Image 1 (cartoon, rainbow, N blue to C red):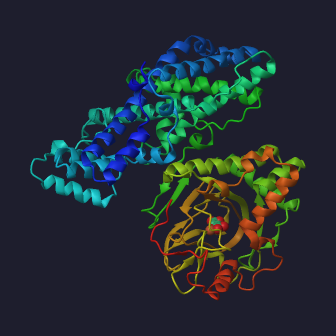
Image 2: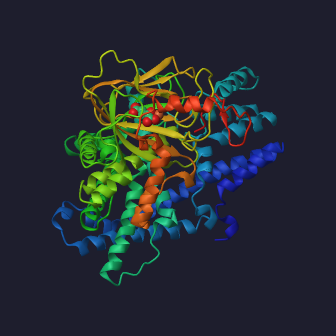
Length: 623
Ligand SMILES: O=C(O)CCC(=O)C(=O)O
Ligand SMILES: [Fe+2]
């Protein structure tokens, strides 16, 4: 085909449209913005069609894998490797197919910014103004409505919609959601319609999962360059490439299910459909898409588990694995927590995983990891144990703790990152900055009449100035932190509640009681001052995690294998210095609060306007 007839990159069209918008060239803006929306839709359609075509073409070899219980009985690894070949062939088919319709540039994945723009339907926001300027009010109303559906708390758009309603020539029918292909009107008392609506939702979710899976395959970095399979080693290497492709596809479930406004995690909870598939003969007819989705997912999973068992491949199952097996639920959001950028999720870890990490904490404290049994830096009434991921890895290398437990500690960081990144829909990337397992134990016999806190009220990325409502974003605050998270491991202790306050640091606005698998996520800035109430008995363990939007500040232990032992040790010292400098000190701060002490020090040096000083005044942390 002529290159002019190939699909152009829609991000380029969008940027050009936005440029026209800002130069006031309204008709050009309308044309380009519309074209970018249309191109994106066509692109997905083409990719979906190609995907389906290649899936069907490849189904022959794939079916062999999946027919009946073959996989259970065939234990010959070469046989399985040959079956994996189908995955690779399909990827090639897909590249060929898309190449016939889409320019090479347009095949590349778009930036996260563009993803965010389209994910939040921002093009319709521009279109709304554009059509208003062009006096095409009906189109403006449709654009406004489409935008508002995805941004229901956007007050300005709500006002605009009210205004359009009162305008002459605009009727109710004009307020259409342009992103919905076949809208089914909802009537709460009509169960048939409700079922239809539910089906439409499921299908929409499945479609989004498909779109996500397509991206796994077209992203060239997922495909190994070397296609030769002339040795067993080569075959294994290629299989590993195929497996990462499969695992990329599998993570789509999490990606889609954690988008706010979508049906939540439970829709893809397999347990339900295992039952459906097993016993109920009626349901598969009513939900054929789900049935084939589940079947394909199970088949692919068999291959992935084969890789885990035989090829040293690491894969955390997003559906049967920790996240979906126990069913992550959104327990509290901004509104319930009376604040901004706060969330509590439950079911992020299983009981068994909590036990493993608790055990890790106990063992590392007993082998003397450097913190065990120390008094807390925050209060004389508690002791404090800490363990970093690297320390855990080192202990595992020395054979002192279980390798897989250390690995789990690391994986949890990634699990939390993925969940919170999806939940907050942060347009930029999110990188792990520091992970720390912390246990706080009440000192027996020293709890009577205790008035202090286990962790005084503080903000994670700036220094609260006592008495004023100011927060100074400068060292020694950990200014690169953008998102904080605490993953709790147990509840068999007294006290130890996490609480959030207003900017005054005195009015408590939300409380969170720790329990195994409960995750609290919040932006690290001044909208989220928080503290921990005294632990009056027992031991409270939690995984504290901080994330940054700056890639270079994100830590590199994901690539541990690239570092020599010495480099790793140096890196770890750095992290400890960075993350928890106070813990390295032998004596406690006299006030029993490092935060307060730091604040006091800070308050004595008021260098207004000096370089590097960033007073934080905004009412909303940027995520
Ligand atoms: O353990 C908690 O609940 C919170 C800990 C915390 O705020 C911190 O370490 O900065
Ligand atoms: Fe904190």
